[in-house]
Length: 351
Image (tube, rainbow, N blue to C red; front, side, top):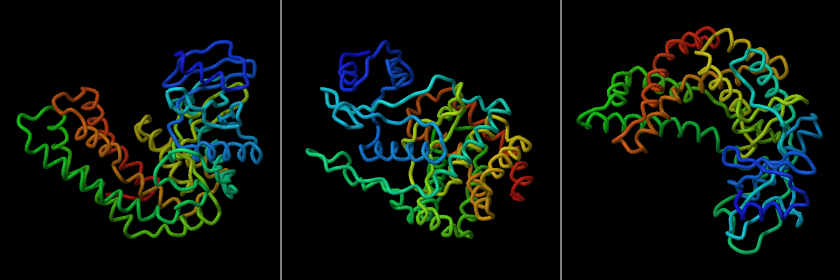
């Protein structure tokens, strides 16, 4: 650990026994248990919201989260002598959820349903006291649970429209490339079929009004985790713990379920039975409305992994494309038929 990181730990009322490095952070064994130190990466307002939501989840549902802890000055963000912001969070001894195991996949899904139940009607997060000096994030608004929820339905439509324009732009660029590499050849070969999925998702979204879902989220203070995946689900001796609420905000809670379901199905080859069991595990605790199922369907129709690979290619050094990206592209295309069967059997949608 660097001297400036040790200087951060000295700002907290704990005695550090030892530290060890992990992905972009440090585990800290202390006289008060295990903590994790990392750069904040988000605004002070968001850190306060993360703690506010975590405390709410513990009080209402006895759910365990990685709460940011206060330093000796009562602040949840500490600054190093070099001016870098850090947070220290309570942590848990355990391992990441293994979604390749059916039991843990379903328990992780059920845990999300519990999380969503207790993230309904979250009380407003008090605004922090104004800070002296430069503003922490220009243009950042207060992170009350109701902030800006009303703009989300339109933003999803614009997002799909923008992504579809970008896909066409990338195809034009690749057509002009000479010579073409394996990634470009594979992308151009499969483009028409994959773009049809993107176009269909945008059309389905145009025909569907999700205003009721957004209005309900805004009025009830319903929040989402924002990054619910197996990396952020810890299996511990005392049960499951949920971490990294950096992106928590008001929103349609199906966004979390869509993301977790999509990531899981990519690992499971869009296995219909596994997906059906996931939906059953979730709805047994938090029943799904017809509108929510429609939202899930549309999000799953869009070929998001295909767009991400294309975007990564366009924003990268095109003189060298990692072989892994070619493999990922081939896997996405190969799994499209499996996803088609998945959507037809579980959501009555066929292209």
